[in-house]
Length: 143
Image: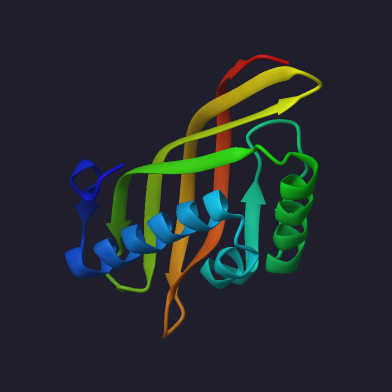
Protein backbone atom coordinates (compact mmCIF):
# COMPACT_ATOMS: atom_id res chain seq x y z
CA UNK A 1 0.00 0.00 0.00
CA UNK A 2 1.17 3.48 -0.73
CA UNK A 3 1.60 5.88 2.17
CA UNK A 4 -1.47 7.85 1.10
CA UNK A 5 -3.60 4.67 1.41
CA UNK A 6 -2.86 4.28 5.13
CA UNK A 7 -4.79 6.34 7.69
CA UNK A 8 -2.33 7.89 10.15
CA UNK A 9 -3.68 8.93 13.54
CA UNK A 10 -2.03 10.57 16.54
CA UNK A 11 1.43 12.08 16.08
CA UNK A 12 1.78 11.93 12.27
CA UNK A 13 5.59 11.97 12.19
CA UNK A 14 5.68 8.93 14.47
CA UNK A 15 2.92 7.17 12.53
CA UNK A 16 4.90 7.69 9.31
CA UNK A 17 8.00 6.24 11.00
CA UNK A 18 6.00 3.11 11.86
CA UNK A 19 4.69 2.90 8.31
CA UNK A 20 8.29 3.13 7.08
CA UNK A 21 9.24 0.28 9.43
CA UNK A 22 6.33 -1.81 8.13
CA UNK A 23 7.44 -1.18 4.56
CA UNK A 24 11.00 -2.22 5.50
CA UNK A 25 9.61 -5.37 7.12
CA UNK A 26 7.65 -6.22 3.96
CA UNK A 27 10.79 -5.68 1.87
CA UNK A 28 12.77 -7.88 4.26
CA UNK A 29 10.19 -10.66 3.87
CA UNK A 30 10.36 -10.34 0.10
CA UNK A 31 14.17 -10.40 0.13
CA UNK A 32 14.30 -13.15 2.81
CA UNK A 33 16.57 -10.82 4.78
CA UNK A 34 16.67 -12.42 8.24
CA UNK A 35 18.82 -9.64 9.73
CA UNK A 36 16.34 -6.96 8.60
CA UNK A 37 13.40 -8.99 9.97
CA UNK A 38 15.29 -9.41 13.26
CA UNK A 39 15.85 -5.64 13.55
CA UNK A 40 12.12 -4.82 13.50
CA UNK A 41 11.07 -7.35 16.16
CA UNK A 42 11.20 -6.73 19.89
CA UNK A 43 12.99 -9.34 21.98
CA UNK A 44 9.73 -10.70 23.46
CA UNK A 45 7.62 -10.35 20.29
CA UNK A 46 4.47 -12.47 20.14
CA UNK A 47 2.98 -13.77 16.89
CA UNK A 48 -0.51 -15.29 16.80
CA UNK A 49 -0.84 -17.11 13.44
CA UNK A 50 -4.01 -16.83 11.39
CA UNK A 51 -4.72 -20.54 11.27
CA UNK A 52 -4.01 -23.65 13.33
CA UNK A 53 -0.28 -22.98 13.60
CA UNK A 54 1.25 -22.58 17.04
CA UNK A 55 1.80 -19.30 18.85
CA UNK A 56 5.36 -18.02 18.34
CA UNK A 57 6.89 -16.31 21.38
CA UNK A 58 10.16 -14.38 21.23
CA UNK A 59 12.30 -12.88 18.48
CA UNK A 60 14.64 -15.88 18.21
CA UNK A 61 11.71 -18.31 17.86
CA UNK A 62 10.19 -16.14 15.15
CA UNK A 63 13.51 -15.90 13.31
CA UNK A 64 13.80 -19.71 13.41
CA UNK A 65 10.28 -19.97 12.02
CA UNK A 66 11.07 -17.55 9.17
CA UNK A 67 14.27 -19.43 8.33
CA UNK A 68 12.32 -22.69 8.19
CA UNK A 69 9.57 -21.16 6.04
CA UNK A 70 12.09 -19.69 3.58
CA UNK A 71 13.97 -23.00 3.38
CA UNK A 72 10.94 -25.26 3.02
CA UNK A 73 8.78 -22.95 0.88
CA UNK A 74 11.22 -21.17 -1.45
CA UNK A 75 8.47 -19.35 -3.38
CA UNK A 76 6.57 -18.13 -0.31
CA UNK A 77 5.37 -14.53 -0.33
CA UNK A 78 3.88 -12.74 2.67
CA UNK A 79 2.86 -9.11 2.88
CA UNK A 80 1.13 -6.90 5.41
CA UNK A 81 -0.95 -4.08 3.95
CA UNK A 82 -1.51 -1.46 6.66
CA UNK A 83 -4.77 0.44 6.54
CA UNK A 84 -4.54 2.34 9.83
CA UNK A 85 -1.72 3.27 12.20
CA UNK A 86 -2.62 5.03 15.42
CA UNK A 87 0.01 6.39 17.81
CA UNK A 88 -1.08 6.60 21.44
CA UNK A 89 -0.98 9.76 23.54
CA UNK A 90 2.22 8.57 25.23
CA UNK A 91 4.02 8.50 21.83
CA UNK A 92 5.63 5.13 22.70
CA UNK A 93 2.79 2.71 21.78
CA UNK A 94 0.96 2.34 18.50
CA UNK A 95 -1.65 0.12 16.91
CA UNK A 96 -1.60 -0.98 13.28
CA UNK A 97 -4.45 -2.73 11.51
CA UNK A 98 -4.70 -3.92 7.97
CA UNK A 99 -4.93 -6.85 5.61
CA UNK A 100 -2.34 -9.54 5.05
CA UNK A 101 -1.80 -12.04 2.28
CA UNK A 102 0.41 -15.03 1.75
CA UNK A 103 0.99 -17.43 -1.12
CA UNK A 104 3.22 -20.39 -1.87
CA UNK A 105 3.20 -23.67 -3.72
CA UNK A 106 3.57 -27.20 -2.47
CA UNK A 107 3.31 -30.55 -4.20
CA UNK A 108 2.29 -28.84 -7.44
CA UNK A 109 -0.52 -26.85 -5.81
CA UNK A 110 -0.73 -23.08 -5.51
CA UNK A 111 -1.97 -21.93 -2.09
CA UNK A 112 -3.12 -18.46 -1.09
CA UNK A 113 -4.33 -17.18 2.28
CA UNK A 114 -5.41 -13.70 3.29
CA UNK A 115 -7.15 -11.93 6.10
CA UNK A 116 -6.86 -9.17 8.68
CA UNK A 117 -4.12 -8.42 11.19
CA UNK A 118 -3.39 -6.27 14.20
CA UNK A 119 0.11 -5.20 15.27
CA UNK A 120 1.25 -3.59 18.50
CA UNK A 121 4.30 -1.35 18.14
CA UNK A 122 6.49 0.05 20.93
CA UNK A 123 9.19 2.70 20.73
CA UNK A 124 12.22 1.38 22.63
CA UNK A 125 14.02 4.72 22.86
CA UNK A 126 15.81 4.21 19.55
CA UNK A 127 13.42 2.47 17.15
CA UNK A 128 9.85 1.35 16.68
CA UNK A 129 9.63 -2.42 17.10
CA UNK A 130 6.82 -4.93 16.67
CA UNK A 131 5.81 -6.22 20.07
CA UNK A 132 2.86 -8.39 18.96
CA UNK A 133 1.01 -9.38 15.80
CA UNK A 134 -2.29 -11.25 15.55
CA UNK A 135 -3.49 -12.64 12.24
CA UNK A 136 -6.94 -13.89 11.27
CA UNK A 137 -7.19 -16.01 8.13
CA UNK A 138 -10.44 -15.13 6.37
CA UNK A 139 -9.93 -16.73 2.96
CA UNK A 140 -8.00 -19.75 1.71
CA UNK A 141 -7.60 -21.07 -1.80
CA UNK A 142 -5.73 -24.03 -3.16
CA UNK A 143 -4.31 -26.97 -1.18
